Every structure is written in structure tokens, then in C-alpha cells.
Image (cartoon, rainbow, N blue to C red; front, side, top):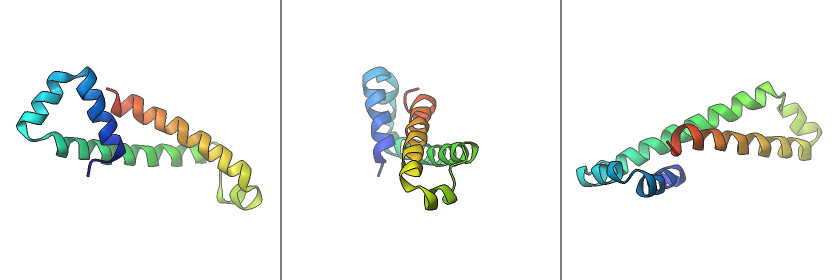
Length: 92
């Protein structure tokens, strides 16, 4: 399975990098390429979220003390990390 990140990248390739898309498709490497992109994207997302949470002091203690603040800050971090993944890996 290629996952959501692979699907996003496939859509980008179809719209903006048609030659690359056609080459991968005709060579039979498209699905493995997209699955690899998906794995890398998930790893990058996870790593970025962890780094940002540590840098901003979003801890398990905050989660225990004030869940709503923790959820809000983690949602913000996750959204920023997703933008980084999109910029660095998906829409390139």
C-alpha cells in the first residue's frame, strides 16, 4: 500500500512531473517508489513532531496537567510538521 503520502506524491507527479510519472509507470516502479516515499514521509513526520515537541516543552507532564493545552499544542506541531513533509518530500 502506498498510503496517503504516496497518493499525494502520485497526484503531484501526475499534475506537475508528467515525464517522471510516465517513466515510473511504464517501468513498473511507480508503486514501489510511492511506497518508499510514504515510508520516508512517515519517518520524517514522526521525527519532526518529536523534535518540535521537545523543543517547545510539550511533555507528558503537560498532558497530565492540562490535556486541552497539550492537544492544542500537539495539533499545532503536527500541522507544522506536515507542512514541512509536504515541502521537503511530497511536492518536490
